[in-house]
Length: 303
Image: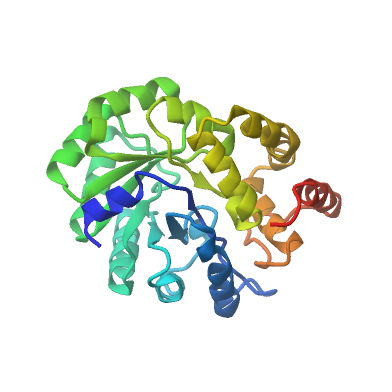
């Protein structure tokens, strides 16, 4: 898949980040992961992001990563495109990007480099080094320590034709509007705040109708229903699901830092698709929180 094809995929439809399966010892569970992808693929996501944020990319080793991406590509071949997460230090991000390209992924989502703050010149050098290390498409994720400004993105886009997408995980409306006005249709845009459904209508109004859904991992039918409601401006359905599920879900998610991932693994376990525990420093939900989440899921009906 060439970069423009990746950009086209990002132009419409719902995207999601499958969980990465671990066994009771915290090791990668390949068979469980493949079964998860086989379950999710037919629900109609435009693409799946293997080893993304919800897939605990930040907890994976360099030895594990290529096999995880290869498993995703092989399992979903001909069914749904796979975009690989990549990130961390520049040289490690390059290793991930090249491994994903070798495995046959359709592109990468370049996650933040983590921890160390850097100026725009340094951030641009990081993104450009990764872009130039591969031929397929790159989507940059604006989040945490990686916050690219409009002029920086414009320069990167001019020098790197394979930089075709921008994902926002910050929620700064003014900055997002400035980037969209600067870049126009040079990029495909993706909403990427945790529990993106809560912000979906606002982002659509800004020209970013596509977002990635974490809850697709355990309530795929409802996730698609909500996306279609946003697409069709069905405010009644949006408000009903926000009130009955998403806002109470946020209350649970916000109790502990890191629960944005942990609560998704909890949901998958509740619906019979257990992905195992999260890896430290994340922590799993407590038993009473599991019960509260189960009640929210049960109220939605069969998925």
